[in-house]
Image (cartoon, rainbow, N blue to C red; front, top):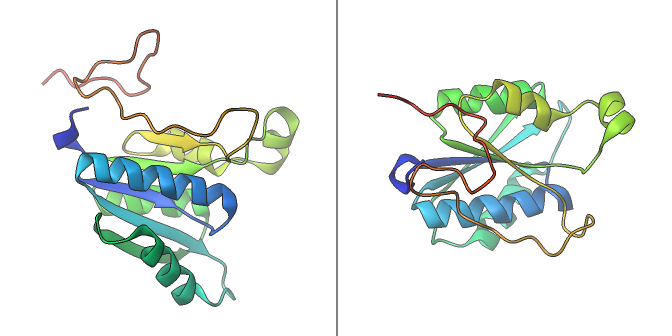
Length: 159
């Protein structure tokens, strides 16, 4: 994936600390690509105060990267994928809760469903401090190749 290929980056947020790490990562990628950052929140029917939360988030992000915000009701995974398809998103960034094993199976996984059904690559970001050093944002290989020892989950186009 060349940097010219990514013009629209989507990050889903629930305004938690976990999603804050994803927002920071998505913002860094959007900045590196020269892309617009879409911030999506999938809301509950009786959820209030989103305007203030979005305004605070946009203010923290600054003006270096164009930001579009949206809120949709419904199933989180379905709405994230639908938004990505509707807005020609080329990269989705999601925070994860770091669950594994039985916890992940019982709780379900929005990130896993998005990864399986998304029309574009999905980058998952674990919460800061989950058994690792502070997160480092590494841009993807710009020549279309994978990093040594890694395989892309998306087949390369042969056209």
